[in-house]
Length: 440
Image 1 (cartoon, rainbow, N blue to C red):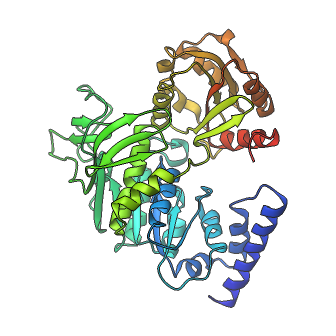
Image 2 (image 1 turned 120 degrees about the vertical axis):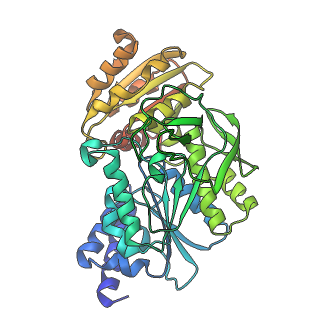
Image 3 (image 1 turned 90 degrees about the horizontal axis):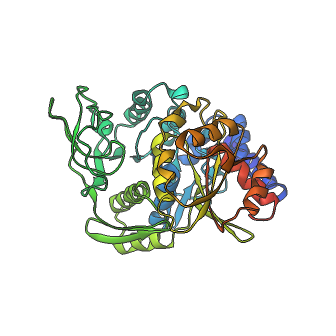
């Protein structure tokens, strides 16, 4: 590295040290300081690494974590932005405290779709992992097609990099790419095929798609009866789903059995993506199985928090498809529970709350919910959505600060608590729980 880069790196490390020692830490400020001193720092830091970029609207954080754990079975020098800080300064932060390496080093990096253009040329990745694209923060991106163009433009910048994509998503096979491509998906269906699924349209000609099998939303073995577009041949595939439980999932990939400590079909997709990366990098199947079985939950993604006698399962939500998948998970709960719904609409969450109307809170009305707590800066909107879904207004406890929300949870009538929170609300409630001593 240049002298300038060395100074910038050391300054960033020093900021990180003080943040860790005297505060609860911070994942983006050290990188921000370092980049101020050397705008080319990322290129120099990444030069000795084989870089893998994980991007898409849903599943980036868990896919990144599982992939890192899988590759750690083969590689000793591996880094990641585990805290989920997925913009440029956070990515720089992941490199700052890494040991000096010259070979056999891997960086698995979660990258925000909008930040790809700011980092790809400097990172020169060997592999892109495209998890999915669903309607997400369209006030920021405009359309799903615009989001996909961010991904394809980034890949076009590094034409030798392989693109490993979710083959069950029609959009991911709609554009000719210069890059080598691999696909993963489900050989088996999970949802019943909806013959009137008018929301699924061919990305090539616009005609309604038909499905041989589906998993959720518009994912599945699709084909277009008009232009002949169809799902690509899958290189890696889920061949069986054995058990979907509120605490874990058991399934087979390429006829090999696996278990992860995460619930929901959407998390099987995340595991499938991580498996696919592992096999591309020649990690043995038994090693991948061990990595899955020993992986811990990522904060805010089915994170279990104990507060006095309460067991809180916390899920971050941010768009209709993701939220509906979490609701399907909540419906697996066998015990009576308290529902907590925290809604913020800061820029990181998406300012436009219209997406809430496209969710299926109505599906929870048959659950054994003993109490409902709402909160966040858009508490009234959240409460109104639940009332519209069929819950009685008098049965919903509105809280006007997250400290009040924590007190309401502590006094909830059930030991089981399912908490849904948008991204910044998740960060804020975790801080409030930490301040009360329920989290470290």
